[in-house]
Length: 292
Image 1 (cartoon, rainbow, N blue to C red):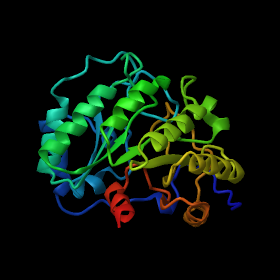
Image 2 (image 1 turned 90 degrees about the horizontal axis):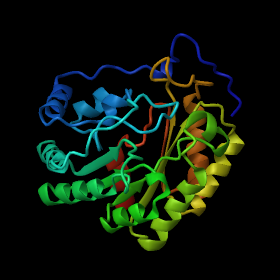
Image 3 (image 1 turned 180 degrees about the vertical axis):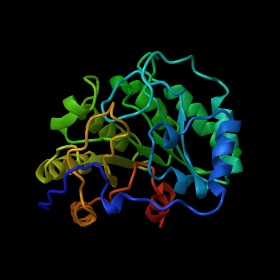
Image 4 (image 1 turned 135 degrees about the vertical axis):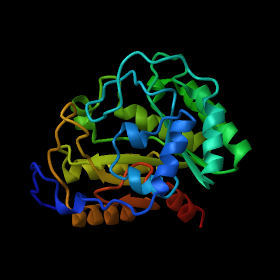
């Protein structure tokens, strides 16, 4: 794994996406607008947005559209958030029903301004989706600023999957994330969920191409596996705009394949590894594979 593919003005061929045919993606986009919902697909400028929308799926982002942190890789707006919308869970549940989702993924902006970081809104949303359409549920929350009582509250909601992104290797936390992010806290969160409810699937995502070494990545995966994480996504970091941290390297597909093989060898049971893989990309298929 010694490729030296460096960023240029043009993306490598393996990062080019074909535009999906048909108008199915418009249905999802219109539904999101109609119900006044937010999706990370839009706010994070995900390269898979049109594919997922065309498949009538989306990753819903709760607690508004303004984040209290300013991570250097993320394009979600930063600033002072608006009050929590009490009707948001109902509208998300309605969207899940109309999209006929079998697996719903719910993420959020970080809300360090809230005492519980938004955990209660997560729980209300999980309950509303279950009551409305019976889909399995994957939550992708923040670290709740280390508030383990908030983590416990979400454990009580018993989502099928608790996804918490590691994002990068420990050495790069200071340059890629904010000072409030803590690698040790990520591991503590996974251990706590594993110990309190081992039936909840533990999942994490890591971006590559930020300057990490293969050795650092494998050490990080070993830590995560030891903490109980068994589901993993590895994808290429793509700079959303000139305001975010630059790409250090474009990782070729064959290297992603090899890293995925090594992760499985380490004991990860479900692994999605590829340039365009994202935290919730094909999340339903991963859960169904786990259940099978």
